[in-house]
Image: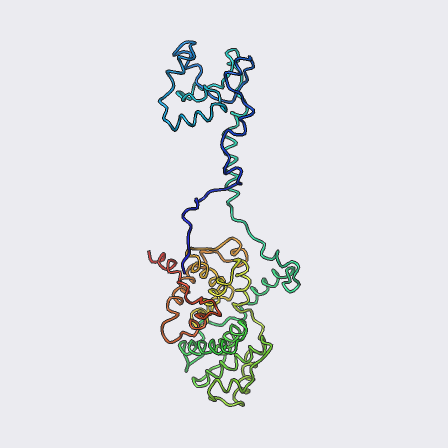
Length: 419
């Protein structure tokens, strides 16, 4: 995926408005100021906040002002002459003289008023500049966006309770996790590779049946929780996957596949009685606890915090489904996996690290915390289309999912760690 960058746009430029951007300096005061010669003729000399080296000129050339001007002026180029010609009506002639010594600079005024104080406009020039710099820093400070403000009138969004809901999910997510060593301590006839093959096949079944996203994540959760408590022989592993999907469909779907459909997709490897018997065993083993927060629950919230579009959503879903196959990823909490998926998807889509303050606020994870796991996800992304387990890649390499699998992996995240 290529990201076009307009090189004609100026970088780091604050545009206040069209009027200010096109305004010429001195235009507004043109009607308010009069030429220096006219003021002297009428005897109405005023104090201008304009600076000249009056005392130095008087000492060097006496009181002959015309002689002083001719000796002080530097050579004038055509460009400078044109600029001076345009400004003659805006500034007194003496203002155009070059500065010689910063110590002898005075505000232009009559000889008898040499001891008067400098006007306030010149005294406060530097503090105004400092104040402007502070204001500019405040302008570029990244704000935290209220991601629920657009749903205040939507009763299904439950804006009043959404923060409490996700706080409860964060508290309960650990109860749906399993030991990262269960494959060694609990299982003797199956291994990590067999688990990956089973989940890759279930992803294809899930796609063919056009089931809800949450159904897939709950299916994988039920498989891991059951295998962490019940020893299973190799020939029954596929049956465990089928029954886990059946239970997840009963929990999440409106239209549930019937048992005969499961028998058909398993090529009649299992009978109806075997499926029903495994269903009872799984429910009893899990103590009928089906309500657990999965990564998909957090993914939807974090995508909203990232102000995502459909492309970012598809890439995030692609990456987090790649994580389902990897046994080493079960040690991470669902909320953390969802945050990593969104962060890595943004890096892949935009080509640079992207993690806003809004995302950090709603996920409770900083960019530094996500980097190590994100590098692992980038590795899964790079090898997604290779090998035998390509179910996720082929699923997201279709128009239905916006060809998200073709998005280039964020290799720069891995390369930074190797330097």
